[in-house]
Image 1: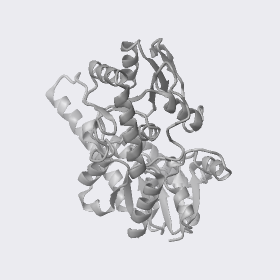
Image 2: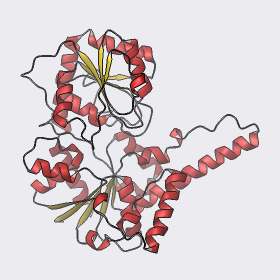
Image 3: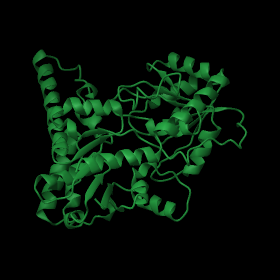
Image 4: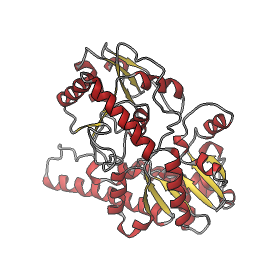
Length: 398
């Protein structure tokens, strides 16, 4: 294996090129590209914006309609129509790594039909938990007036999720490996697809510890502030706003586009940030983390490992993290409560406020948590760890 092709939705090539030209930026969201290059592999990137399919092609139209229907009915995304005119290019590589289920589904379609030859590995990026987890299904509405209609609605809901599972299973069956970034999601996948367990891998997420680091030369800013960051659907944005309103003695910084300005209390700043649009540079976000007192991550229950990148970035900067304990927490046997961060067990406002006040009133505990957090990330979650583990998965599975 010498030639590797990475598939991304977008936003990666420009960052890789900036880094190659000497710009300082974190590399975790390149998912091993720099590591493979350093090991002597030939690595290319292909993004959706690079593809120019013939939209008049009848097969393109059919696949586009089918993918739209599956997205609307089952929240299952596939980009198979985008790859129609890329098969010859894809077949020139020794291995393909798809960063997202929609991309994995797109190439798996052609693998299933014998038109694509290289082995394909794909990362779970949220669709596994969102689509096929019956526990996260929207509840049947209570306005059904008869038991028959209620039972029929439950059956329809179950059938939709079974179809979503079948669609997802086809990705796993027709590729060489599903890579999960969280332990909970990994176990969830193994339960759903028991006959495919040898293809399902757990790879702990990693961050760039050279970039995300404590700032030992800067004095702690005063007054101290608390940071919340992120925009994915598993964040509990309502609870975040309520926490800040209930703790007017502290200053908060919200780095997100998912909280409305009218919901932000007077003691909080809304710094609307977006990773792909780079509204705030990575260096600016690092400075915000380095100067904060605490990072909070209230989450909704899910098998998806939500919040891990922000948490690990903060931990690498030596900052204490307060996060909801969910089924999808990424490494529950490695990242320990009160040792490397602090868990909150519920979504109760009073419990969150008590936990925040407890840490803010104990700077020695915060410092110890941050110090041990940095040590853990250096032992377990560096880009070198990620690259070596990914290389082992890819090379031993083909």
